[in-house]
Length: 120
Image 1: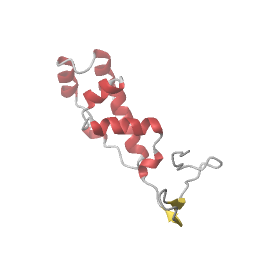
Image 2: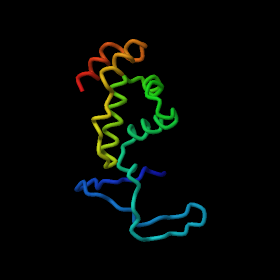
Image 3: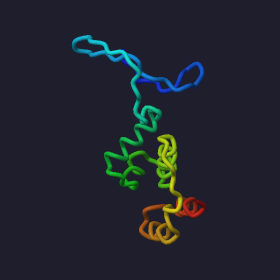
């Protein structure tokens, strides 16, 4: 049985490194200190979200429908993942009041979602 790679020590919460790789075909093993992808820091739910986001080419409205979550929830999940991956979150580019009103008028978001966006 194969398990997903761990990035955090279950004992002390320190960062783990991969030290051994094995070929499933010829059984060759390579030992050294290997770095892990930043994506190994994400949990299964976050990886599923990123997959849906990429498959839908970043179309938040489609991601919202596919995952059954609201527009602000999609944005919050993105912000959280961006932060976990070690990138700075640029808040000035957040949705403007005019954009929120436009989205509300087009029926892209509900009044409650518009209120949440405007609170940010």
